[in-house]
Structures are given as structure tokens and as C-alpha cells.
Image (cartoon, rainbow, N blue to C red):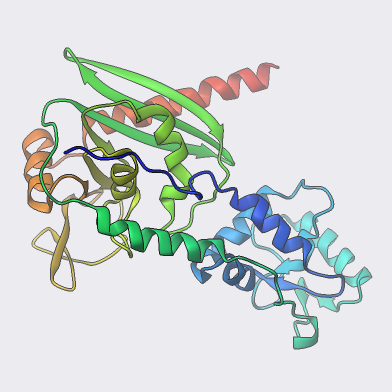
Length: 315
């Protein structure tokens, strides 16, 4: 099937920077919770990720991260005891009452008036709109198979693309800083920039460590990658994001959207392949085990991470 490779204004979106700009809006003497910032980003589901971003940005200069607390008023998140003590002192200097690591969180201290464009909400809208482009018509290569995996160490991402050629596995690697944390339902905006760099010229069927149709908007990483790069894709995930399992089939409102190969391997069609064909293909090629080619891609990310860690330690 012929098609056009498309792009998104959000495929390289830096959510860390956007998070910082929101935090900078919190005035002295006020605090905001992770949930309130997540809402300002456009989706409450990002609350835990806000705590993670706060921890990753702890060295940032001139950013009042101490003004971001839990909904209960507790300091913490991913903070050390020393960091909690430091934040306690700063908040007290700004006129807030803090006892036993908890801000007296009254309405007069709560800041919610963020100026924001709600980027996550716009991304959800994009996913819903583009999910209509997902094709379940079979148009995939059964012989040329590639796989992509991305692993992380803090904000550093390590990606590998592997494929089989003449009975030999070939891998390409890439490392970059991640500019988007993990948020359920938004994995595309975290990992597509890696996949695009490594696999955009690949002409076969692409297995992706993530979901396809099994997604709140039926547009998981595998489906989105397939649509954006016009490739046949299959999602291979390790946990169930959506639906219920009956006789190994993943059902959502009685619609088949995936299949459980084993307790750690859940497959769903991404693009240019039907649900039934994706299941028949994966069982026929890999039986009921995790695909070897994805293991090779993952091992390549681990090797790359170790090599670069050694280089940094030696420098």
C-alpha cells in the first residue's frame, strides 16, 4: 500500500522544558501539586511523571522546584532526606508552614492559575484524529522483519534497531537525551524520535516494543509509528494497558484488539496488518515466546548503555 510519510508538531516536543516553564509560574508563598501541574499539562495521568521530572531536574538553576509538592502537601516524590530538609527551609523562608515534611496546604497557598496550552490534551486530540488512518488491511512483508527497542538511564535514551539479513542479525544503535518522560498512553511522543532516526528507511515489517491497537485511543506506539512512517508494524508489549483477556484474546467492549502469547508477551496490530493476521504471523514465526529479534534489539541497547557509561566514567 502506498502512502505518505507524515509528521507531527509534537514528535520532538520537550515536555521537560514545558514543565519547567509551568513551575516558574508558581509565585513565592504558593505551592502546586503534581496533579495540578499534570492538569496544566493537559492530562491528570501525568501526575506521577511530574514527580519524576522534578527529580530529574533537581540540578536546574533558578527553577522553584521546592514549590511542587504532593496533593497532601507532603514533600517528597523522589527526593532524598537532605533535599526534603532543604525544601522545608526554603518554603519556611517564603512564609509557608511546614511540619514533619508536610506543607500546611490551605487554599490561600494553592496555585492553580497556570498559563498553558495544555499540550497533552492536544496530543490526545492528535492521536484520536490520526487513529482513523490506521489500516487493518494486510499489507506486510512476512520475510523481512525488523525490531526496535529503547531503554533508558535517567534522561538518556539508548535505542537499537535490528533486522535479519541472509540469516544474520544486523543492528544499528542511537543514543540521545530523552525530552519526554514515560506517561501512560503517550509513549509515541517519548520514543518515536529514536525509531524515526533508526528505522525510517526499513522496508519490511517492524516489531515494536510497545502497544499498537491496545491503547486508550487505539493509537499506541506501534500504530502511530506505522502511520507516521507508512510501515507495517506489530506491537509487542510486556503488560496489558487496556481491555480484558478471554481465551488469550484481549477484548475491549467485545472487540478483539490483541492477543496474549504468554504472560510477558502481548501482541496487537500496529498498522497495515489485521488482528488475526498479526496473531497468526507471530505464533507461526515465534510460537508462543518473546521474539528473538526483539531480544537482540534490547540487548543492543544494554550494550550501548554500558559502553557509553564506561566512556563517561573514564573521562
